Length: 329
Figure 1 (cartoon, rainbow, N blue to C red):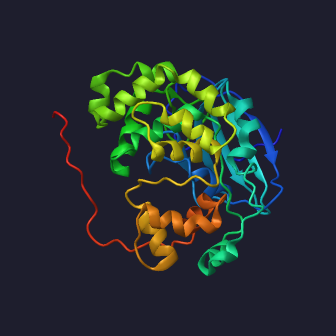
Figure 2: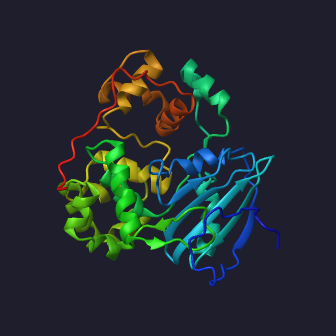
Figure 3: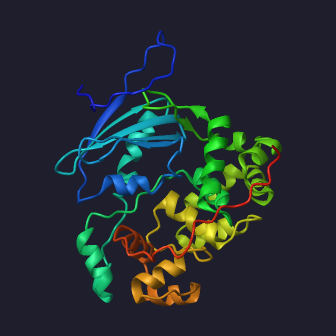
């Protein structure tokens, strides 16, 4: 069997323990797809213990992703070849599931038919530049929900730091020859039993940690209900019934787990400003953002992705916010 051509730069395991042979496959997308961009949308900051990329991806670089699948932990390594095909290798008990889910992760389930980019000249131009933009999905509902809860009402820096800490402390070491130590998130019971002092040490606020623990008590039921829901509105009803989960968290979960091309995260600190600036040259609020995106109903998340892909973002106006840290030292 041909090798994916990946090489571990750092394998901090007992050298006497052999690395299992991976399962390998080739994936040939039916439409052009920027695999690196589709998969990177699932990344939680620069030091995410579940994600690593050797760049430039698409020119021999490899994306590594670790997940906890329904069959167990899996490490997935992806390399996109010239011409668009993807070579993938997977290790761990969840390897077969990860390879089966690979097309969806790369955006195969994302259908851009019916998207009329010509409704706004800038959107048409970004779409022309990025015709291979696809919205991937993980089909891992609880991990998507937890990561969204962590990001409620805090800076990205705080949320990513908390994710990194908890996943590293309470997750499971990734199988395979990962290029650095990587970890899968805890399972549902693991999230439920993270002690209160660990959330505090990780820098997560009590409202978010309580929501995660309470949600984990009903985790399997939530996953089944969301997975079987007919559409985005039905999934919103599943998530918003949970105490501490609102429309922003529900939208983010729908985007990450299900690749929802129409989900819009209202209530976001920056998003409405960025959409308004990109489409009009001026900031707007949530109502204004929804009005601007209305002509693209069914594909509003696609327009947002194109805005970011096109770097049509408002210039930073001041210094980066440095949140206060009230943890005990």
